[in-house]
Image 1 (cartoon, helix red, strand yellow):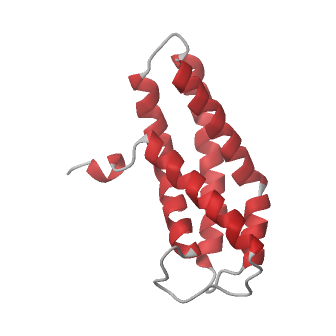
Image 2: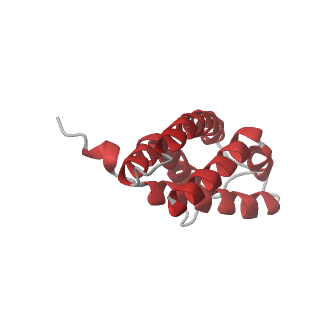
Image 3: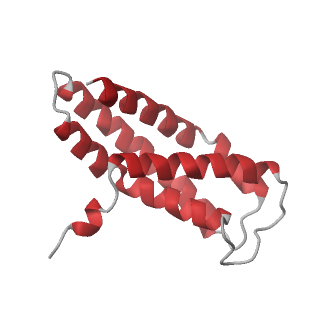
Length: 136
């Protein structure tokens, strides 16, 4: 059995999916929509949330691979912090998946998701570990 699906996103791809989703969510929330546009819409909120959820699902494995690749003097600290990042990603993914579970995603649910401490903690954790990996 191949483990290729688990390696489909590297750390940078996960971060890009998460950041792109969050940026789109900010713009979407500002639109004041009562409901989501039609399915299959290019650039739809649901598509961005699905990509965000996928990035969150693969983030732990991707960051572990990145730490292994950069195994410098601070790899023990990075590994310890990666556990925090994984917990943040799990909580943020649960929140994103709640938004995905509603039949029509309006601006209000996205505004509440944007304000979620779980998503904000995740973003801060990503910024910290990303910068630490860059300078390792």
